[in-house]
Amino acid sequence: MRLFGLFMLIFVMWIMILMVSYFLIFIIGPLHINVFYNSTDRLISSIIKASLAIGLVIVLILLLGTLKTKYLQKTLKRN
Amino acid sequence: MLSPLDIALYGIIVSAISFLIIYFMTPYLIKYLNKKGRVVVDYHKPGKPNVPRPAGPVLLIGIVMSEILLYFLILDAKIISVLLTTIVAFIVGYIDDMKTMPGWFKPAALILAAVPIIIIGSHGNYLGLIFDNAFIPILYILLILSIIPIVGNTINSIDVFNGVATGFIIITMIPLLVSVTVFGNTNVLLIGLPLLFGSIALYQYHKFPSKIFLGDSGTLLLGSMYASLSIVGNSEIIGLIALLPAVMNSFLFLSSVKKIVEHREVKTRPVTIRNDFRLVASKDKSAPATLVRLILAKGPLSEQEIIVRIFILAIFSSILAFISIAIQYSFMVGKISL
Image 1 (tube, each protein chain N blue to C red):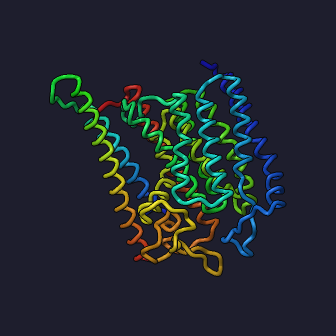
Image 2: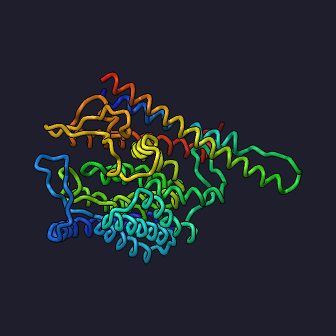
Image 3: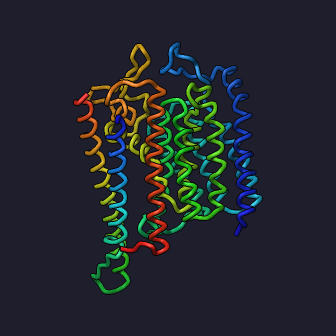
């Protein structure tokens, strides 16, 4: 089936979105860092959480980039 | 809160207005554009016919008229924010239709289109992330400012063949409208209906062989309105999943070209046309990796065959969006917990 490879590529992208959502909700979301034991800790925690979330999305984008390059090169070589 | 009967009645009215205006006005716009010589060459067909462009104005009129009427029926400020976003995106696209602007213009100018949503405050502070909602009030503003330009340009970049942009929006609007009804409210469903039915009307002229091209004004309008609906309907991730093939296309293009450029500025074409008008993927490593190049990687295809395959991919991603809605709903009502 001609589109099977692309179906798989989209499916993998979907799984990766679900995984990132899972990490954001269950791992990064509940994270709380105590440094000064006052209201500043909330701000520090929020900054760290936001940075981790943005970092995670960047990792996702890089992984997708690698995935598509491999898929394209492999398919073009085979045909 | 509207009763189911009101929702059905208002839904039929705004859908019909949008559909009828666009369906009956487009032939006049085609005639006008042909008369004024505002045509572009369709390189993918024998004889390379001239096709009028842009269809954006007629799409805007149909949607604006039905949304204004809807505003007087339900008095929801969300309508104004979606409408202003759509109008700003249309203006950005129309400027690009009239005068060739540099590659950075559209994404940068589309940031302005996101401003009405933020100023009117039609967005929530929670981002629906399938398993739960994330409370990100400040980050969410930045997200809105990036979603509108990204989705606008995503729909713009997939509009490479006859009927693809309108057909793609028709298919992917279905999971989005279901999602905004489940996770947003029925008002957002009503706001979205003119876009769906307007696209269906325009598809009759945009489908293969195209009698009119959308132009940047049409594609940016479609993409920005889709994005604003997903924001005001708390369905950003569902919208992203439904758009995956188009997102993949713009992402593939960007990651291989490494900068924001207009398609016409790209030196190495991702696909070439053979004498029999079938398209073939470029083997050149420096050519941008686009969705069409991926589809053609297994061998040449005609324009119509490529269009069908893009729609099949849109149906596949829409199915994944429906599965995501089911998962998110199950977590929301507590049927599943981790």
